[in-house]
Every structure is written in C-alpha cells, then in structure tokens.
Amino acid sequence: MQRVVLFGPPGVGKGTQGGRLAAALGVPAISTGDLFRAHVRNGTDLGRRLSALIASGDYVPDSVTNTMLAERLAEPDAAGGFLLDGYPRTADQVAELDRLLATAGVSIDAVLLLAAPDEVLEERLLKRAAEQGRSDDTPEVIRHRLALYHDETEPLVALYDAADLVLRVDGTGTPDEVHARLLDAIALREPTTSK
Image 1: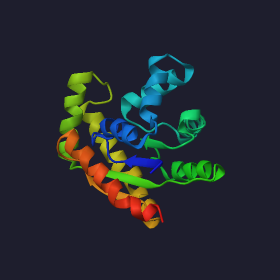
Image 2 (image 1 turned 45 degrees about the horizontal axis):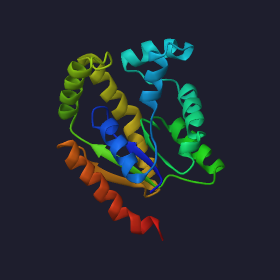
Image 3 (image 1 turned 90 degrees about the vertical axis):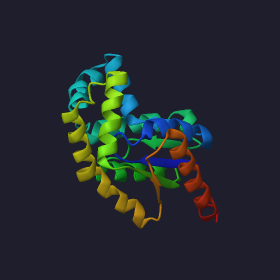
C-alpha cells in the first residue's frame, strides 16, 4: 500500500490515525486541513481568505484545494506514495485526484473508511475544542461539518466502492484499538492488491 485515502467524518480520528498509519506505511501523511491551517497561521493572502471558511466549517473551494494538493503531491517525499486525510471531499476533487494520479501513471491502492456514530463524533470534537482551543469546534460548527460530510462527502464512498477500493474500519475505541484495526484491514487487503 503506497497511495491511501483515509476517509471519514470530522472527529473520527483521521488526524490521529493518519500520522501513525503513514509512518507504518513509510509514506507522508498529507492533510488538507493542516495545509489550510498553516496558511492561516502564517498570515498568507490565501490564509486570510480561508480563515472565515474554516471558522464556519464550510468547505474550501475545490479550485483552491485541488491546487494546494497538486503542489503538495509534486514534492519529492510524495513521489513514492502518500496517505491523504481530508481529500477528496467532493466529486470534482475525486476527478482531479484521478487525473493527477493518471498523469503520473499511478492510482489509489485503498480507501480506508473510518466510521463512528455522530454522537461519539460530537463528543470527541467538543473535547478537542476544550483541549486545543480550535475555533472550528463549536457545537453549531460541528453539526454543520457533520451535515456537510453526510450530504457531500459520504456519497463519494460509492465511487470507490465501485472500484473495490474501500476498507471499512470501526473508528470507535482507543487510538491503539483503531490503529490495530486499520493495520488488520490493510494486511487482509495486501494479497489482493499484490496480484
């Protein structure tokens, strides 16, 4: 597994699991949310434009996200593979990712879908807000982000299901338990992808 998409709703643990899983796979973890927040933190022109969108929980326009991702995938450390967290989130982003990878003569190896009930996700995000002071983790924004995920991003799973790429993993429990499940899912998949 060299090119993996980590999919799931806000609060399911993609950030926590993405870094651990990328290290286990020997590839960089690429989080579009982290890229956006870095622009905001660094006060770039793009960061100033993104700030209001991030605070409200709305999606960043595809054109901006696609450009940032293309630039990141062009960096040398991503040449041998990557783990994507937070991308793709729309059908246009799926098409752009397919185009970028086809140009490079590669494709996605697996889509790991982490799932948990909305109540668990809301609780996790409120806890994160208290611990980290994230302005995009208020109850209203959390509900908005979950609704956006269910309406716009969750349906994309069907596109990857059609290509037999989706591995479903229970995202509840401790980080160690979820990490073990992710590794088990990949281990079960490996023989199929290496044929």
